[in-house]
Length: 446
Ligand SMILES: Cc1cc2nc3c(=O)[nH]c(=O)nc-3n(C[C@H](O)[C@H](O)[C@H](O)COP(=O)(O)OP(=O)(O)OC[C@H]3O[C@@H](n4cnc5c(N)ncnc54)[C@H](O)[C@@H]3O)c2cc1C
Image 1 (tube, rainbow, N blue to C red):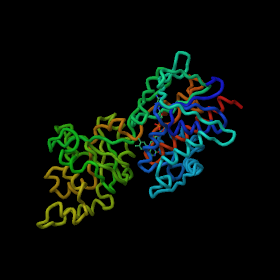
Image 2: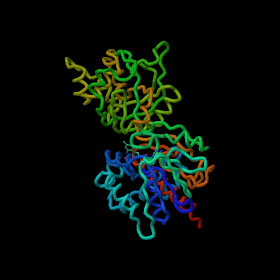
Image 3: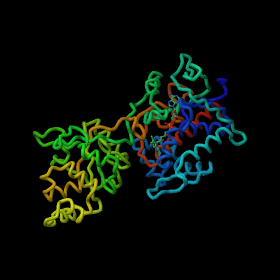
């Protein structure tokens, strides 16, 4: 490639491909490099879960999901936000629909047809466009002494010089799909300001129930029977670490910490989560993973409060639990009067001792607010996404590195995070489109 002509994009995920589309559509020659044998592997995996492309809530609410980065991402999302994502998919012949939770999916819930149509457009752009050249099995190794992009390829090492380069290397979740976070030390060495990567939208391990002889995680009985099973329609809230009574062992079972008080009603979120072999995961847990993770980092543990019966008031639950049960067992009493059985009942048995289970007031309180102590996030490799990355402050308004003219960054490798719900793909696409436009202006000023 002649340095004064084309641009190089490293990383063929949604961010890199979107930048390539913008540039190629504007007639700029693009060479796109990826370490894997094919592009879009994480995008295809996302398709296994239905491919939640974006979210149909009001724009203000959508932007607020990016937390402290909402202000910085707003212009990008105004330019290429939820509606533009849907229009773009439609333009590739892929219809979308709004699901019951206002999440937006392709009509066929699949990623492969969309990716196929997208790659076809990149290789065969409309008149005036330049086809994108894909170079697979090109692993970026860092910068050469002359600023070139060093790649490991099947034919040995190669250095590429381009007029402008975009890094869109993703975060560090699911590394076998290509994004492994190996770029962090390379970019720090090159002078970029990079925040440590951390698991986001991830599961957590629970503290053990010492009463049942387990130092960490669930008891073997609970894990064997219930790992993989969902807690359906519960509410959860995040609290700090419980304050153990004087003399209590620091990781006493969650139910044995009477002085921990549940958060107020405004902080409860309804939905579902899943028990794992060592803790919890699933949509409700992912939605709260940032505050849970930060609390653990700060305090050593965090409390996930669980309301097992969010549709019933505390008074009602107490009245039903306290109702005389005659010769009925406690489990048939709870099932008969409150519909409480299965994994919910198992969790109560896991967390409360026998005495608490037979004390109506304590049992009713636990049903409405059961504190689960979480001690660590699951490893980044298992997470849906990662937080941290290239700090936006080290980039200019076009996502170009302040200290390295011509080097742009986009996608999940930027320092923002968001819950699941289509926010991750939308922001990756939006930042790819934004960087693509800035690169076009950089290589073709005026
Ligand atoms: C299981 C799962 C399900 C998901 N479901 C959804 C969902 O439904 N909705 C949603 O919004 N988000 C979802 N996500 C998140 C979403 O897929 C990512 O946020 C998004 O793919 C990030 O896009 P990206 O282009 O920044 O990075 P990536 O998609 O990770 O792409 C980065 C690319 O860079 C390449 N690369 C990395 N390092 C190098 C290197 N050194 N040299 C060359 N190439 C390299 C990789 O091979 C890869 O192709 C899901 C994630 C997972 C793991």
